[in-house]
Amino acid sequence: MTFAPLTWIVLMCLAGMVASIAVSLLASLATHPRIVPVLVSYAIGAMLGAVFLDLLPHAFEHATDLHQIMATVLGGILFFFLLEKLVLWRHCHEHHCEAHEHIGHSHSPRASGWLILLGDVIHNFVDGILIAAAFAGGTEIGIVTALAIIAHEIPQETGDFVILVHSGFSRMKAILLNMLSSLATLTGAVLAYLLLSGLEAWVPSMLALAAASLLYVSVADLIPGLHKRPELKATGLQIVMILLGVFSIQVVQTLIGE
Image (cartoon, rainbow, N blue to C red; front, side, top):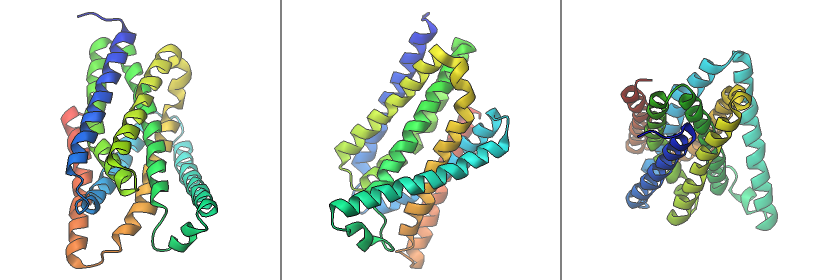
């Protein structure tokens, strides 16, 4: 069946949205309150795996200046730190400094959820640009690349959903927000198709910024929460689930031949 490149791009992005919704629905069935803390460990591993095995390597591959990429990651981490501070200050102003009462033993969980969503939107937007760029090289290359991106998103979307639920969002709202964030893929793809020469140069920096958001949330917000369970059995389970999250990213990359 022959379609125009833009038609293929839209169809593959819509397929990715359907996959994202399906993953969120399946994750919602598995997120019993007692299971969520365990899945948070998995989500940490999936995010760290996405940062160091996917986003940063791709940013380095497309970059002309590696120092600029690392500076973007550093700047992104500081940006998300300030962004979370703004959320905490707003929360304090509206709720009589409840945020300050929890600082030191519980970050503003909802802030972590919003940061994850922001990073996911950036990541999905970049994925859309990559899909459009691949179709510029031919329909077959575009389809393979799009399927690879969709497959890679499965473990990350699972982790994102778990973190949103862990951050206090209802399951239905988490599903809706995941679905809305996936629209960024279609937006990035269509814009890239229309203005590919202008957006392609921004891909490395956007990948680095997406990596910074995942790195900040996993290290600054989620990992400290694991230290509330210092007992040996809980620590062992956390390590296993983190490694499983990293391994899932590696498996997907191996299967798609990256």
